[in-house]
Image (cartoon, rainbow, N blue to C red; front, side, top):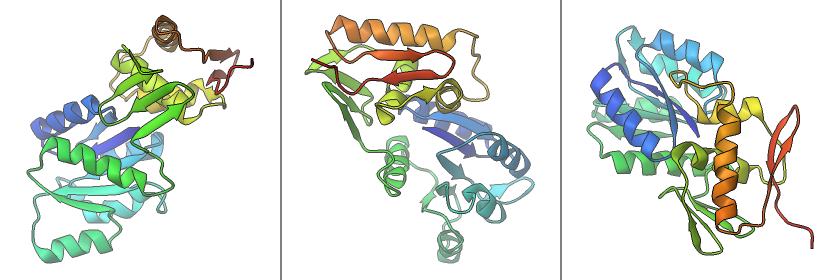
Length: 225
């Protein structure tokens, strides 16, 4: 899941970004309201974490634009602890209101909880055939055997499992797993797919990842007898 973090304190933004990356999120960071607007108009985010005290405006004024008509959930992450501030944030459209400082594990859990609300978009466990993916612990097993994957291969597999039986376009996959600051080579996805296929083959997983030339990749849900 790709997430936009709007936070004007660089050390805190770095700490949050690192923690959420370990939890399986791809995180882009904006330090101002202007940057946030520009990034939200360029990329498709599944969730926004929004600080209210921005150097070029109040985050509450930015909130409606980031929600994109209610399509994108927004969690306010702020030091403003007055009741009126909390009410203004929630009544203004925030899906959750979290006070700083926050434990990073709790923050990741709250992100997952908010993402589960609309249509179970972020179920904690994904299952396709013999493959089970624990999205909380970022662990994968196939027929009970652990599959050893790097962070990128784990992110690729998650996207393929969420769309199992359908083609995931290259652009959509890149959009989901790479942030603006990631250095991505022209064959990065192909290399990641190759490593993922080898890891699944090593544990005898029968479900193939099919390359659909010119379009993308698909995780086959069933293998014909």
